[in-house]
Image 1 (cartoon, rainbow, N blue to C red):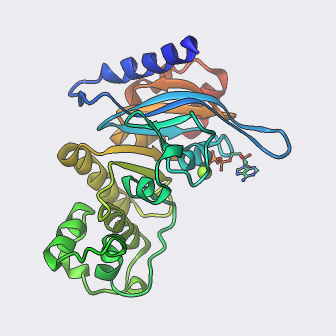
Image 2: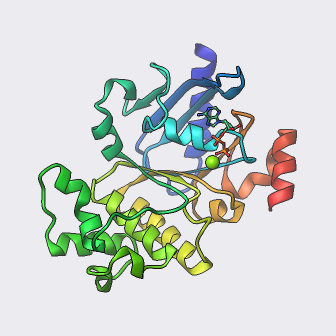
Image 3: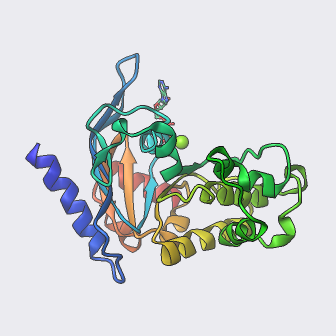
Length: 262
Ligand SMILES: Nc1ncnc2c1ncn2[C@@H]1O[C@H](COP(=O)(O)OP(=O)(O)O)[C@@H](O)[C@H]1O
Ligand SMILES: [Mg+2]
C-alpha cells in the first residue's frame, strides 16, 4: 500500500519539476489499476499514477500495451475495479456515470458527428440537461476548438475529418469538462489539422486549466504539447519522463520502442 502511494507521489514530483507548472495538485489518482482478460492475460497490471491538475499528460507505448484500456477506465467506458480511480479524491465508481462523462470528456481517433448542423452537434450535450446554447455560446465553443463561425450551419458531410474532429472537440467542450481524454485524436488527420487540434489543446490548458490525458502514436506530438509522458508497456507504466528527456528511458522495451518510433 505505502509503496505504490510513494511511487505515485514520485511521479507527481517528477512532473512538478516542470517550469511554469500549474500548482493545482492531483486531478486523477490511479491506484493499482488492474485488468485481467477472460483468458487470464493481464491487460493492465497495477498501474499507479497521479494525473496533475491542469497538465497535459501523454501516454505512449506499443500497440496492444493497454493505452486505450487505461484511458477508458478514467471515465468508465471500461468499468475499473472499485478503489482504483479517483477524481478530485472521489472514487469514480461512486459517481453518476453520465455526470462523470460530462466532467471527463473523451475524443477518439475518428470523430462521429450526429445528423444535423455543426451547431446542432455542439448544442447536443447541454440540451440533454435542458439548456439551449445561444448562437454566441456555440461560436465561442467553436473558437475554442480552433474553428471559425463560418462552420456554424454546415452539415457533417461538408467537413474534412480534421474539421469534424474539431467539431467533436467543441461538442465535448460544450459539457464544460474538467478533463479531456484523447485516444490518438490526430492519427487520421493531416499535419495542418493536427496542428489546429494541438493549438486548441494547449490553449485550453493555458486559458481554462484543462487537465488532458492524450494517447498518441507520435512521440513528436507528445514532445510538442505534453508536460509529462507515461510509457506503457505490457499493461504497466514502466517510465514517467519529461518530454524532452525521453532518451533517458531506462526500461529496455521503452528504449526499443523509442528507437523504432522516433
Ligand atoms: N474487452 C477486451 N477483452 C479482452 N481483451 C481485450 C479487450 N480490450 C482490449 N483487449 C486486449 O487488451 C490489450 C490492450 O488493448 P488496448 O488497450 O486497446 O491497447 P492499445 O490501445 O495500447 O493498443 C490488447 O492485447 C487487446 O487485445
Ligand atoms: Mg488503442
